[in-house]
Image (cartoon, rainbow, N blue to C red; front, side, top):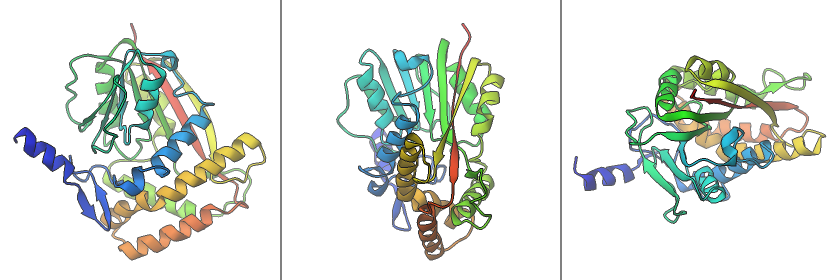
Length: 301
């Protein structure tokens, strides 16, 4: 295909149910890429701020928070993490890769973005010393293969860090019942992503997956996101308020394609259910939370 035609086809997004989706490797990633998802102050920015609060303002947890020289941000989305890292570390060259070309046109000189399918062959000519992977549950059909590619494309001594939240939500004090609508939503997301072969339940397995892939010095950091502002502790309450803001802006976006394409729901049925989820997500009396993981490891020297 001529380069001009390829560029044109990448920009011709799939339109479905009033949303747009990536065209490269059409159908792999079921979250929309339209302006409702990516323009501030919507989901991408809210969620990035939530992650930064979670790690006490640190952009990552592994030793590369102090700097790297060649960085790959997998599933960069709007590029907000890549841009922040590039700004904090002007000595680094940062590449963000995504199925959708939804990143800003004006970026720092040490940051660039590429449209590519990370599940296909990696063609970067030089290895990286840091690979960052965040919010990619439900995106890979074969995590083992992905981590093998990451391992092969890291220089000896390089780090990979995985960050994600876990489905389904949990509760420790009995205030969440089995019929709590957001919990039902989670279980349906798990069912749909499982049917697609792209599970969204993998973060508790990250530590073993990195070890099996050959990484050493593997470390795990676990945190919690209250689903709203129910927590008494000020830090946890703030995390919960930002978690709620992020979730409320993304519930329908996360659900629409999965429910209509995979579960066979109608658009109306999905929209009504998502409205119920958003309303119930605000219930202060339900002390539910998401487990959140950061797991990192080093390629041996």
